[in-house]
Amino acid sequence: MSDTAPSSPTIVVGCDGSDPARLALELAVRRLRDGGTLFCVYAYPMPDGWMSPRASQLMLNEGMRRGEDVLEQARAAAVAVLPAEAVHVELIGGRAAKALADVATARGADEIIVGSRGFGRARALLGSVSHELIHIAPSPVTVIPERLVGGD
Picture: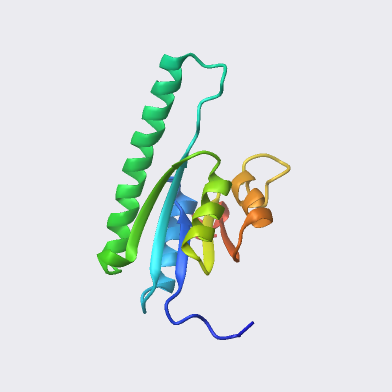
């Protein structure tokens, strides 16, 4: 394994509209200013089997609509700095950690960057998505903790 960084890195960033995710996007954009490719990923929840077809469809529609909004904002922020052809968005139904790992695998990502909201005592340090992701990711994972949002 070489210690030199790839000449044109590929970074996958988790986008969910939260402040830690916005910091993750900012870091990814900074790292790609000299070239590379960015994949912004939003994963929306899939309905459980116990839901009625109507409720399932409403849940899917809302998840996709929210994801489209979040990804549109992320893309706009990224193309303010990066070339438009270097910024891609991926809207995926399913668990966020798996979606991020799958995109990283499919796109040959050099790094995954995510924000963490630190929900729950057991995952106070990382958060459930980032905690799962570090166990299944095909590439290094950088986690931006929520406590950095306020500049602490």
